[in-house]
Figure (cartoon, rainbow, N blue to C red):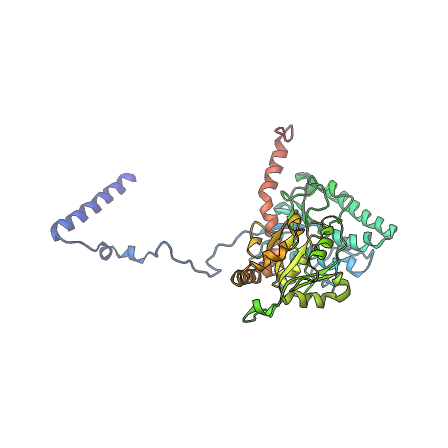
Length: 435
C-alpha cells in the first residue's frame, strides 16, 4: 500500500515541475486543487452548538437509601422517621437562619441527585441506581443538622441520639460490600459543621469529606489531599440589582464588619481588630452586630461598602466571606489557615485581599493597604466577584455552575488519587512500605 502512495506522490511532483517548465510562470496551485480551499483555517472557532460539542462524562453517583431519620426527617421534628426520601417526598429547604442555614451542603447535594431531570442534560453528577456502575457513593446523612438538632441543645439525652445516629451510619457502612471494596475511599460524606460526626469521624476517615475547613479534626482524619472544601450557605441575600453606573463612589464605606468578637481560637483576634478599627474614618465595625441588628442591617452595610472584613471565626473560616461575595463587596480575609472552595479553578487573589494575623495586628496597616488600591483596581475586583457569584449559590432546581455543581466537580477531581489508593491497596502485601 505504501508503494502506491509513493507513486502517486512522485507523479504529483512531476506534474508541478512540468507545469512550471512549460508555462514559465508562477502557478496558483489552489485553483488546480479546489478541495484544499474548502478546509477551514486552523484557528477557526468551533461551533458552539451543544449538539456538536462532545458531552463531558458526568460523575456517576450511587446514593444509599437511608431512612428519613438520618436526613430530611429532621426538618419535620426530632426523631421523625420514614422511608428513604424520593423526589415526591423531598421537602423544600426550611427558612433557617444562623448556623442551620450556613451548614446546608448535605441537603443540596442530596436534592441534586433526586432532581427529576438528573441525567437528562449536561451535569457534573448523575445518580445511578446500579452501584456497580458508580464512580462514588454518596452517604445522605445530615451530620451537621443532626449536631444542631440534637447535640447542640445542651440536652444529654438528645446528644446521645446524635451519637447513636453516627454509630448506626458507621455500622451500616462497614457492613456494605462497596465500602469494604475500597475501604470507603470512594464514599462521599458531608460534614460541614466543624463538630459534625464528631465522635466517629476517625472510623470513616478514608472517605471524601465535604467540609467547611480543617480547623478542628486532626490532619490524619481530614485534609485537603482527600477532602473537598464547600462554601457556607450565605445568610444575606444575593445583590441582584448591583448595576450602578459608578459602584465605586456609590459605596461610601471603605471597610465594613458586623459580627461577634467573642470567639474561640483564631477568632480571638477579632477583639484586637475591634480596638484597631473602631472609630476610624470610613470604617464600620459593629461588634455583636448580627444579633442586635439582624441580617437586614448586615445586608445594607455590605452593599454600601467597598471592602468587607472577614476575620477567622471559631475555625479558620467563617460565613462572612460568602456573604461578602454575594454582596459584591471585596473580601478582606484575615486568617492564616483558611482553605477555600474550588481553589484549583478560582483564583481568590483576583477579587480578595489577604492579611496574616500578625499583619492585621499592626496599627493602621490594613487601612493603609486598602487606601492604596486604586479605583481601577477595585472595579476590576468588583467585576470579577460579580462574575463568579453564581458558583456560591445553593439552589433547587440545581443549575450548571452553581455551588453543588462545582462541588461534584471537586469530588471528581479526587478520583485519580482514590483509584490509585484502591488499586495499590489491593495488591500490596506491606501497605505503604516506602514510609
